[in-house]
Amino acid sequence: MDNQIELIAQAAAQWVRDQKLTPLRIEQTLVNDGVCGTCDLVAEDEHGDLVVVDWKTTNKAAEDLPTEAWDEHREQIGFYCAAACLLLERNQARTFIVYLSTKEPGAIKPCEVTDWRSAEKSFRALFNHWCYRNDYDPRLRNGTLDERSEEHTSELQSRGLISYA
Image (cartoon, rainbow, N blue to C red):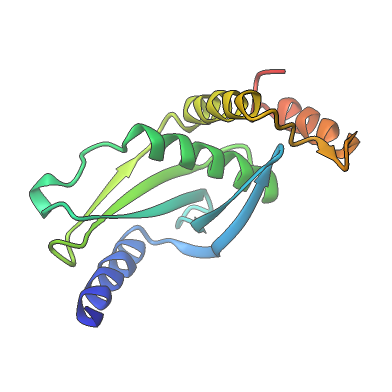
């Protein structure tokens, strides 16, 4: 098992080197408009552009690894990307879901998500639905409206990172 983990980690590290990425944040908790999550890698490429990466392990063989990111992973990376852009004061980024095979350790398939803004909107719609179904308002703290959340939403909208109310 340890050898499998080592092979998977080596494949991921090699991909980072091949992409000429310089890590800025690893396992970074990102917060965006009432939601938080932990992103695996926020980096810069050789041109100084932001790159957001999330690793996904799967028990699929190399030939069965996805050729494009699954919807739920696209939505998650969209959220991570919007939050990373906010954190690092950027307006653009490239995003990747990188699938790592546990069935064939070392097999890897990176899937670039070029429409991360659309994916983030989809994530936000699903989150808003979940909030409605669970009677949850992330802006409330101790039963009162948190004005910082309203300011945060305005900031995201002004930077073009979200386009909804």
